[in-house]
Image (cartoon, rainbow, N blue to C red; front, side, top):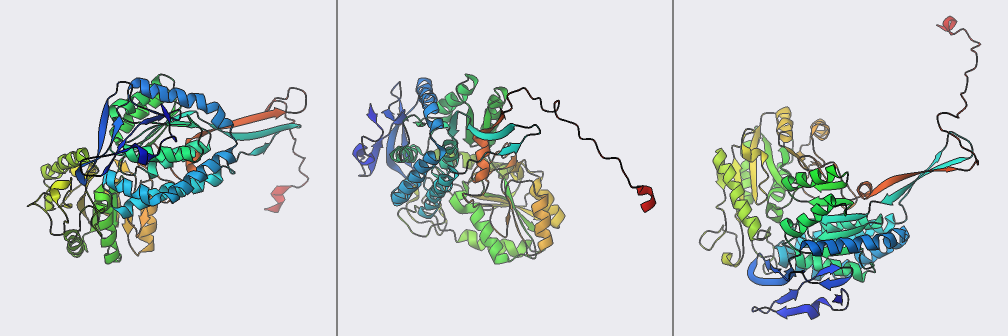
Length: 542
């Protein structure tokens, strides 16, 4: 076995038939490059150019995952004992290496999952921002000193690491989200077993190598590749086996509920960032051009493949017709193609062939419900392409933008996340009706309202049941120092990013330091203070 840093990525590259670099990928366990125990592999493909095979990666077995867990458990004592400022310095090094190699990582993310170069750059920058933010948190993992009710006694609190954290993230933000999870875990002194997304293993492999190059000790972060039903499930099963102390998961609500059940019965902490059917309300007082722009980006940026993508567009009936005309003009002008080969496209392909198939099945819900299919013709093909598609449709898995109108609260498509370039449009009678509709789905991740009436904005932000709200802004967009997460079917109340995420990766340890040399019992040995006898007849003051 080779150490993770002994061989550069460029030396691992072979040439595929089209002359594009093909990587031999590995698991990284205790700092060593390893293959799957049974030798099975899978291929990562470029969804914009399906003949482009990025790399071949291990299909990890249960034994492989357990080896990674054992390495993380072995490394835990040394890493948790490392001073937090030192841990922060290593994390800062990660951020600086990401900056140094940003262009290459951005190009890799675009090639592996098809996001535009601009959006990939945003994802990588989020990882950089996270590193730089948490570098300084290594000097601010504050506890408290507390005054005791007894003499000669000192009370204090400390943050302690949870232990070994299982990390499972989706492929749509393959740089930002794993760093959201692992960087705060590391700063708190935890170790990690990271199961990479099946559709973004090469980017995960590159990021894990950067972590080690930054000075991360062997075994602190261990990377395993494979399927969610394979390596991912083995990682969850390890909770029942008493080997994992924390699970952090980004993905579907159905899988999140299963993980929550496993963690709950074992009293193990879990962070669940799940799906969304994110509402956007547009009121008559809004700047309509701005609202159209926000709705358009929210619905179709990243080909609608964000958990914060716009789901239900709720338009006040007084401006419904006018708004719809302007919105559809934008939709019909959408420029779609491979960002690596064509400039100024709004979105590229679906994340993978699997996501494409799931999306085509999902939009059938809208048609079955009887919603009006206003625009969109499924998969883009040669001979079935919108006017502004650029490139050869047969190269990858591209989708039309889809718009469904006449959607009502009793339809399944009002409640279901479609996860692709599609938006369902709903008409509201007034503000109260719009707020009701915004809260009527089972999800509660992100939300937005466009209004220039400050009372409406206030009533919306206190009335909406969501983890995040944009006022005169889109449903999407997160910053590294603001909490990210949802309520209802969108999560279990945990948060990622900012100082709030520290609560998810540490526990409070209270210390009672008795200095008196004798046993003193709180609540029992405390002298009772008697109140002085009143010298004033208060009844005469009335």
